[in-house]
Length: 626
Ligand code: ADP
Ligand code: MG
Image 1 (tube, rainbow, N blue to C red):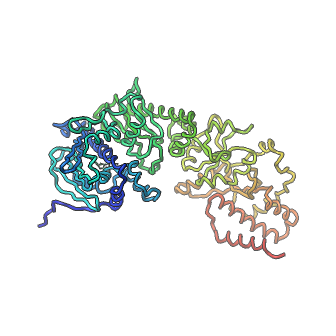
Image 2: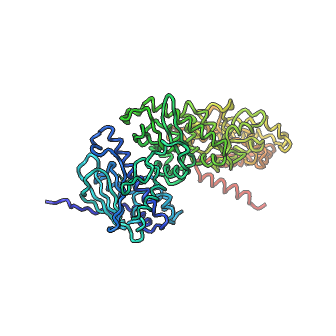
């Protein structure tokens, strides 16, 4: 017969071990944030239980007053942070305190691994969650009992590679974390010091934090306070807590809605872009409270998907307290709140964009790609979202341009907003398709986010101006050429290239739809464009990559009549076009130019070896003696 051992020793996940090593050597001045982290966890644990108790009052029977208690034992040199929250069972202790759970901690490890930051001061900024207790303790003992269960569990570790789990002795629900303080961390035995740290970092916690029967914090949720009553520092700490974030908020929105629907909201726009903004399962970060009771982490439908970068709290007065997750799904009150919150957030963004374009640009660089989804996803606000959008353009590739700015700069007679789309910002900015537009001073939007193709395809116009791809259809630039004719080559200077185009057509046969003279090129010899009736080249490539499209539509090869090579070829063809050797050479050059245009377009060549052979042959000819 085998008996289960009472003490199980387990290894930390490798990342945790590495993290703990950093933590153990962290800087003295940063260490006090461990208390903030433990209190934040305790507060979360109380929130979770308070929610569950809505459905099952038995869970908090006999002790419905949530609190976080600090206690010190000077003789044993220990500090304990205890809560009467939800607690953890054995499996949860192992999963939560033996691996890297998520959020701030994971971000910290990632930053460390990327090697950008080998210094410890960052710990204070990131806050590595539970593991930060090892900054001040050389042994940590966790006793926990999950609400609604009878068994208590004990977790213990010296933070050096392994931890032990065994049955515990805690008699009430909740968790206590006892830190055996390092010899140089005796300051955390001092009540005055603890009170100071709590007031500094944890004042926003809505649950009383008690030490020696004294409540150290204000214990009122910040969103319930008057706007003027919350300092920027307090916002920063609260943001860290709700967002599990480590940066500073870029924007803070704090308001109370009264009238048909009543709610308070305290929302933050993060200062940096989370790594998983585009993960499919990515949710927003706005918690739902109902009359000060936490109800749900990030309920679907509270915030539109394209605003998923928001963090914070919405506290409703109207929803029933016992609202279940299922009931929330199609709840009309929630839909009204979403509408109101969305309008408010868009309004604030519009204001910031107007008041401080530079700061708005930073925001846009972080989250613009997500917001653009709103152009087509939000039927009601799509136009507004379009107005918030900022772009790089051919005229101002370093700055952010709004569509309003673009329209104001439009040339006389210009009736469309031109854009070029591609997946690489650099390739887009240097595309030959832009040459003719540049020359005529016509600005083109440079689009290189995957979402761009979708909103462009689904947006009819901006203020009556249609969106037009510069890689599709005829460029129609002739009318603009009139205005800047002086430094343009006179048309009669261009050799008649019709015979050359005819030979090109013959040479390329089925691989192109047509060959024609280009208006959009200035320096480059050739480029590929889509026919007006076909879809945009880049969009088609995207659809092919997503397996939504198999066939490749044929392209039109546009040829630049004023390019030296084309001029020379046209001249030769005019003079000796019937000569078979000339025809054979034009044939080769046509194929080379087509492949070259494909490369610029980011397409793969059907036969790269063939291209290389032709290229080498052409070069050899150029270097041939005589
Ligand atoms: P985070 O809070 O970012 O998830 P932490 O390292 O602070 O990361 O905590 C890891 C996890 O451990 C928490 O998500 C939670 O599930 C659990 N946990 C930590 N402290 C407590 C506590 N006092 N009560 C219940 N669960 C806790
Ligand atoms: Mg935490």
